[in-house]
Image: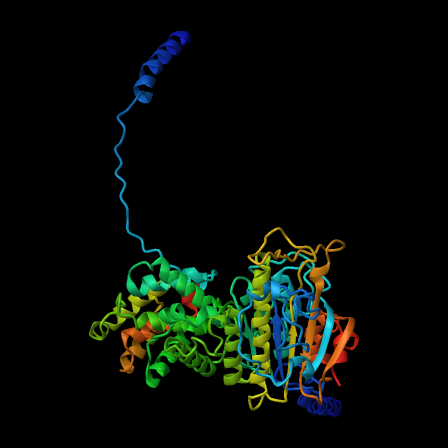
Length: 168
Length: 442
C-alpha cells in the first residue's frame, strides 16, 4: 500500500515539475537614463592643471570654443617664459577678456542682476564644476548686490584667477 | 603665587626677554653674520660649451678682445665667417678689472648643458642622471641668498634670465627640503616672451579700475580662503606680492610696447650680428636698470652651434664676448650698481679635444662635448673663469695660469660676497675657505 502511494506521489511530481520549471515568457524590461549632474567638491580637487590644460580650459570657458593650435603654442611659450605663474595667468586671463575676436562669452550685467542667485550658481558650475554651498552662494550674491562696480566680467576674472580654478 | 612658581616664571620671562630679540622674522635665531664684499652679484654663464683653445689660449687669434688682453689676429682661414661688431664699450679688456682663472675646471658630472648649468647654479655636480621635468635636487644660489639673509630679500632682488626654455626655467629653485619656491628667483626667458607672439597673447590685457581691482581682490580672497586646504603654494612657482606683481606686469607691458614700436630691433647698433645671446644680455641689462637686483644670473648658449659649424662657433664666441663687455659697461653706468657689483663669467663646460666629422664652409671640423666620467677625452672639462669687481674687493689684472678652481666654487663665492656663506648648513656646499676662487679677492 505504502509503495503504491509513493509511486502515485512520484508520478504526480513528475507531471507537475515540468509545468513549474519549463520555459516561461521572458519579462520585458525598459531601462531609462536619469540625468545626473556630475560635480566635484572643492575639497576633492587634488590635481593641478598643466599649462596646456589651464590655457585650453580657460579659453573654452571664456570663448565657448576650442583654442587654435597656433594660439595654444604662443600662450604656452609665453606662460613658460616667466617664473611667477599666477602673474602670467592673470595676464593671460585679462588678455582673453579684452579680445574682440572671438568675443568673450560673458553675460550682460542686466542678466546678472535679474537673478543674481542663478548667476552665482551658474558661475560656480561653469568654472569650478560644482554647485556653491549655501554660504558661498550667500556671500557672493551679497557681494554682487552690495557693490555696483562688480560686473559679470569681474566675477569671471576673479574665478578664473582663483586658486581653485587651477585645480581639478 | 607660590614663591617657587614666582621664581620659575620670573626666570623664564628673563630668559625669554634675553632670547627674543635674536629670533628673526624668518624664524631663524641669528642673522647672516658675514660681512658683504659687495651688494650685487651678476653671474654670466658664458655657456654653450667653450674650449679654452679658442678662448683663453687664443688658438684662432683673440676671439674675445673685449674680455681678454691681446691683439692676436683672427685666423685668416675663418675670418670670412666672422661678422663685424661695434667697438668695445670698455676702455680696456675686462680681465684688467679682475682676476682671470685660465685653467678653471668643470670637474664632475656629465658634460651636458643642463648638467653644467645645474652645477654652476647649485654648487653641486650632478653625478646622476637629471630629471629634466623637475627642479634641481640641491638648493640653488637664489634660495641660499633669499633664505639666509635677514630680512629675506624679495624675489625682485633675485633674477634668473635664460636664453631658452626647455628645462632651464626649473633652475630658479630646487626641491630640497626647507628651500623651494618661496626662496626662488624670478625667472624670465625674455627672447621667448618679448616679441610679436608674446605681445599677441599678453600685450593687451583688460584694465580694471582701482575700485574694480579691490572688489575682485575681495571676491578672490573669499574664493581662495574656501580652497586653502587643497592649495599648495609651491605649485604656483615663485610668487611676488600683489603690488610687486602688478608693477612687474606693468613693466612687461612696457617691454612689449617698446618691442612692438621697434625700439628693440637693433638696440646695440650691431645690425645683423645681433644674436639671441646678445638680446638675452640686453634684456638682463633692462632688468638691472629697472630693479637693480642683488643677485642676477644670465646665460648665453649661442656657441653651441659648434656641434655642426666651427666657424659660426668662433663668430658667436666674439658676440658673447661683446655682450659681456656691454653688460659690465652698463653695470658700471648704473647708479646703485656701479662700483658695488661683482661680475663672474664662466662657461658651464668646455668641448672635446677631438672633432666630429662635420665640416663647415671654411673647411673646419665641428666639435661636440662628450667627456666620459673618467679617462678618455677630458677636454670638455677645461674652462675659464673671470671675476671682475671694484679694486677694493677684487684683485685687478691678475691672471691665474695654474689649474685652479672649479664650477662648484662659484655658489660659495657668491655666498661669501653677499655675506651669507657662514649661515648655510655645512655639507651643502664646498666651503669657500677651501675654494681657489678666494685668490680673486683682496
